Amino acid sequence: MFAGIILAGGVVENMRNIALSTTVTLLVPKENHDKANGLVGAVQGIGFIVTSVFSGLAIGILGMGWTLGIAVFSTAVALLHLLFVNIPEKGVMHDPELEGKKIDLKGSLAAIRAVPGLMALIFFSTFNNFIGGVYIALMDPYGLTLFSVEMWGVVFAVAGTGFVFGGMLVAKKGLGVNPVRTLLLVALVMGLLGSLFTIREWWWLYAAGIFAYMLLIPAAEAAEQTVIQRVVPYRRQGRVFGFAQTIEASASPVTAFIIGPIAEFGIIPYMKSPEGANTFGWLLGSGEARGIALVFLIAGLIMSVAAVLALSSRSYRILSAAYQQT
Image (cartoon, rainbow, N blue to C red; front, side):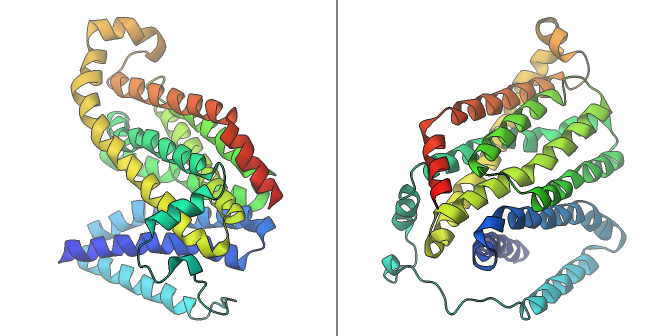
């Protein structure tokens, strides 16, 4: 029963994220969508830190019962606050093409295809998440080779503040005149960071690299949301955001599931062997986790190359033009 409730909560959370993106479209003038999305990213960053640090402390000190009680109370307060938020919508915006359908995947695809280049943007973000799954799977094992369990939790929480500062930076400065270009440039830099922050087994390099990586994530997410909010009609945005979130969110766990065994039974033993040390020692140095460092290096370079190729693609030019014309 408990697992079923948690699963239902996860479904509701995804629905909330979709509604949040379309609510930004409704409440905020289009010239400020990027800044509003950055503010959303900052709030989500705060939530990330709270769930990463304080929830763990609450469970350890107060126990699961009190922690769940605090979570339910906090959710109730948020719902009560929503009752007093003015939503200037005359009624529910229905897409007449739905014709009473409950599920319309074909219509979602049609809404995406109606904007040339948008499908390519979603696939690029999915590919980035696919690469990001490498970091999800191996970031903790690498951190635990440098820190104790307790210290790693503190370091990761502090480095995670980059998510908050990144969102605040976007909220302050925006994303520039072409968020599509911003997204690809951010992905390029994220790839370079991901390939370099484990180039040597130095704790400060790893911590600083995670902070910088987290700093860029809100810009990437806000850029994609801003583009969709601008080029997709409001009545169809829910379906587009839902489709994008479905395939993008599924990419990281797949990679994490695949890369873990490959790294554990293939790459890490190879890098501990004399052959691996002789081949890559000049590049990655020596240490316990040089196998993970090699995986990060390859994954980051793939992400950067993909961003460079996307910047020179026809889809990038078409979608950028569509954004400027709306």
